[in-house]
Image 1 (tube, rainbow, N blue to C red):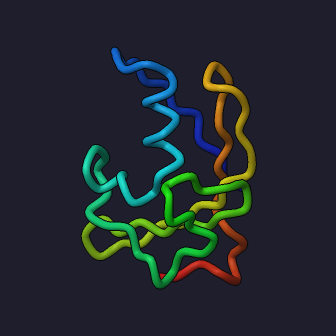
Image 2 (cartoon, one colour):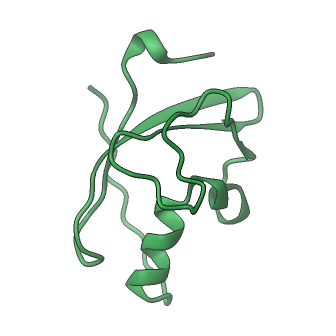
Length: 91
């Protein structure tokens, strides 16, 4: 399984950062992702609070990358995302 270890610093409050991380629809506004591919995503919360188990697919140029939200804790803890199983990945 591929893992990512990313560190970033923000002047935003932890609550704001967590709200944005959990809301996949906000990612194209503040990240390098061009768009959220809603047809390839599952478990998206309409209120922007994607739960554990949600699969989010992001398009950047011609490439679509997927991730599954596997856990999160309090705003001072880390979130864990993993790629979905190979059988559910799209090119």
